Amino acid sequence: MKIHEYQAKEILRGYGIPVPKGRAAETPEEARKVAEEIGGKPIVVKAQIHAGGRGKGGGIRVVNSPAEAEKAAKEILGMTLVTHQTGPAGRVVRKILVEEGVEIKEELYLGVVMDRSRECPVIMVSREGGVEIEKIAAESPEKIVKEWVEPYVGLRPFQANKIGYELGFDPGQVGKLRSVVSGLYKTFYEKDCLLAEINPLVLTGGGDLIALDAKINFDDNGLFRHKEVAALRDLNEEAPLEIEASKYNLNYIKLDGNVGCMVNGAGLAMATMDIIKVFGAEPANFLDVGGGATVEMVKNGFKILMSDPAVKVVFINIFGGILRCDTLARGVTEAVEEVKVNVPIVVRLEGTNVEEGRKILRESGLNFTVASGMQEGAQKVVEALKTKG
Ligand code: GDP
Ligand code: MN
Image (cartoon, rainbow, N blue to C red; front, side, top):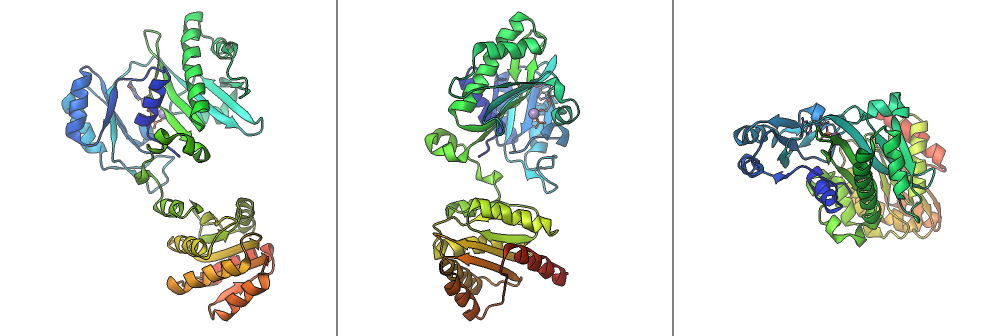
């Protein structure tokens, strides 16, 4: 789960990390009021969407008075902000963060993520942070200092110090950086994050460190332990079909292709997407209906998959284990009868009650193309796409 910058900053503040004074607003008048409360200049007005790159996309304004803040808010609220992270469709801005402007001497990058190959969190810091960090990571990775943390031991103070000295900081700055690094690591660990990032972490003329931006992604599997975090969810920022799917406990992720996939088991779902790509097509979604799916769940999954207008052909790839093939077949035929399906459906069924499942599909009178293996299934999907033009 993702949250907004203003929410992430509140969490970081709770862990002792300095953040600029300010708060969120939803109307230009409110923005003016917040600017008046801050009572200084400059004031920064920032679009709140679940995507980065807002600076380059025109979603961040530095202004000099409450009146200007109101004007900037009027322009940003309601705009469709397109950044390199939103995709070409962009995101409508519904909230802004109004905060005190900070004088920037240097922009650092500081992030904590899971390093899957080392099976532990890694802290990454660079003195060349800011909006070009992706470029730095790609072209001069040596400018990023890394420190891995053994989760059962926790972050040791010497590790945080080492980062500071490797970056070339003086002892006073090393101490300040240590406090921010520890705070961010603690946030990451205690809140079950997948990513906790401050970019830029700003070094001011006075030698202070302030988190000017904040991004936190949480592990959904840990959310049941953090009700206060789950409450921060903003459904406006999520794909409508994904919200619908989460109501039925379905694992659905919207993707950019046109092959709708209905699969049971995350591993098989990924293998299915791979084989579709191998044969030159693109999946429209990831959908794992789960091991213990009922007719109802299969039906709902199929409906969600079909309500994506990009879907030009459907590939059902099921290995019947706990989810029996006849259950799947019943769910799919019921769904096909209810929803008007006008795209070809390729089915590959194997496993428990496969004969019964195939019989249900055959006798439904509906038009399914049956494949006897994954490879054949993917080939038939691609053929169907070609004949559709
Ligand atoms: P992002 O583009 O979505 O990552 O948004 P950020 O919050 O990181 O802001 C992008 C850039 O805007 C920063 O790297 C800064 O250069 C600039 N910026 C943001 N806030 C301030 C501020 O208070 N003062 C100044 N001078 N620049 C700011
Ligand atoms: Mn940023």
